[in-house]
Length: 266
Image (tube, rainbow, N blue to C red; front, side, top):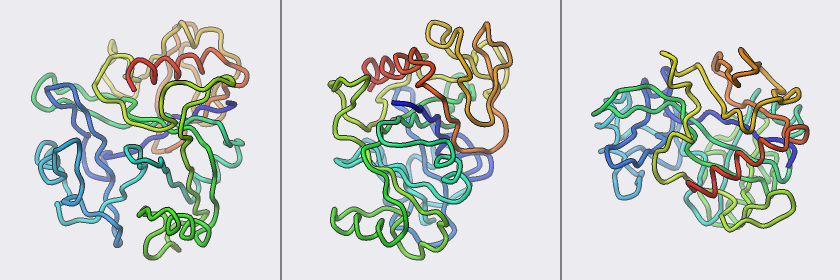
C-alpha cells in the first residue's frame, strides 16, 4: 500500500443541498448525489439497512425528490465493491500513482438532525483496490459479465470522460498480511474515531488527525492539503475537490490508523 485516498462522496451544499444523516441509534448513511441524466437508480429505489430512500430524504429535508435519479456510487455493501471516477478527479488519481493495493476511505458531510445538529466530516466506508478498469467499453463489459448495475456503465457514458472503475479486494490486505475484514465495506455505527472534523472548532472543514499516527509525518499530502499546525496534526479542508491523496509509503503509521479504523468499526 502506497496511497490512502480520503475521497469525498455523498450530499454536499450544492449536490443535494445538505448533510447526510446520523440517526439516533448511531447508524449513519451517505446519501448519493443527484444525477441530471438517467441512471440505474432513483432515490426511491434505495434501501439503507431497512430504511427506504424516500424516508431518508424526509429525515434530511433534501432538495431532491424520491423520483429523481441519483449517482449511486460507491457500491460498498455488495458482494463486489466498486467505485467509479472520471474527469479531472480521475486524472488526479492517476497522476499521483494510485494503484493496486491502495485504500480509499470515503468521507462526507453528516449531521444528527434531531439532536446536537453538529455538522461533521466523517468517514463512512472503505475500498482497497484489487483491479482498475479504464474506458467505458471495458467497464460495460465487466459489469455485464458480473451482472452488476453501476452509473459509470449505464446509459450515456460519454458524460464520464476518463471513465474508470476501481474494484475492491475480497479481503483486506495490509503490509502483506490478510486481515479478517472485507476489502470494501461500510462503517456500521457512528464513532468519534471516524470523525475528521476537529470537535474543538466551529466549522466542519477544520480537521484534526490523531497525533499517535500522524505526528512527524513526512510530505504526507500529495495534493491540495497541507498542515495548518503539523505539531497538533490539524489541517483545513478547502474547496470542492473529491480526492485527497496521502503518501503512506513514506508514512506507514498512517496505514496503522486506517487498519485500526476498519478492524474496530468495520
